[in-house]
Amino acid sequence: MRRRLLLVLLLFSLSAVTAFAFPLLMSTASERTQQFVISRTADLDRFATLPGDVVASEAERYAEVYGEEIVVVDAAGTPIVESGMTAGDVSAQIDAALRNQPARPAPTVLPWSGGDVLFARPVGIGTKVAGAVVLRASTRVAALDVARRWALVLAGALLAACACVLLALVVARWLLRPLKELDRGVRAVAEGQRRTHVADTAGPAELRALSESFNRMSDAVAEAADQQRRLIADASHQLRNPMAALRLRVDMLPSNGSLLTEVERLESLLDGLLALASAESTATERAAGGVEPELADLQVVAHDRVDAWRAAAQAEGVTITVDDRAPGLVQCAVSDLAQVLDVLLDNAIRYGASEVAVVCDRATLTVRDNGPGLSKKDIKHATERFWRGDDTRRGTGLGLAIAERIVTAHNGKLKLHTDGGLVATVELPKEPLL
Picture (cartoon, rainbow, N blue to C red):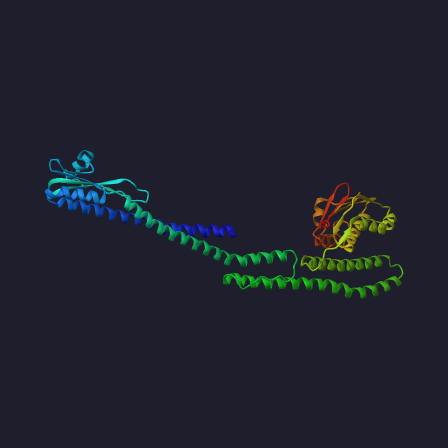
């Protein structure tokens, strides 16, 4: 945007300077040409009024002083004075003057003009022509004068153009600096930084008002997010005691299998809400730069969690294997990586798989099972909160949402696709090079 604005301002400024300078240049050249023509016409008039016995001596003196050539002829075209040129050299001009024809206007003298101009005038009173005078005048001096005047005009135009460029830079900076601040603020909010503020004292009044509105919006968004996390965490904590009391009473009841199952589902839902609130809080802190990146060994965490889930898997008739293809450290807290892997293993074991393979390849972790997988339509919604699909056994619908939030909080990606079963791929940033 800066380039486009500067381009528009500069083009407009240069066009305005050019529109002012060009007519001034041509006016200067026309004025100097007019002076040149008036001066030479006056000389012709003077020679035309001189007596015949004086014309010759005056013509010679004129040619010596000014270096310009003169021819004077009588009514019959007989030369009276030939100073520097002959009547035959300018016969056409002599014939036109003797016939009292108007002379052609002299061309405009420009800095690069270097030729001569012929001036012709009839001699006589009224319509009676008694002879003719022809003067060959050099435009060199007039061209030098025009060049000097043009140099002054162009110097002024250059200074004006420089002033316009400077003004364009100042105006562009004045207009675009608040916009650049707003862009930085919007990007910061999009990245999750809390209570991002921008300067609201620069630029025009409209942009200052917009900056103030952005600051208020940033505070409101941060406050709303805080209230949402507090609501989830407080509600989950407050419901734990009643849930614990309810479970004790249910355990004392005979034939309470279905009721106990529902209580366990409620407890699982509360645990999921607490985990989701924690993941949201971690994501916000990391986006704001408040948490230093931690490193985790992908292979170590994978083996640890597979060992922890092996008993549960065997109880369900599921075999778990780990494939260490390449070692690697990733930028992720060990506890967060373990939680993500727990979610993926729980899903793979719970929903119809008989084999689960965990593959560690540098900064990529893949969990593959041979279960029914998910359709393309279901995969699009799998990481949404509380989505459970058509299978009512699919828990609370928070597991994959929590895993996806944790992974994205660490600048990673969680990808799902079906290939003979569900394949979940976790890509995390590698250990930074020193």
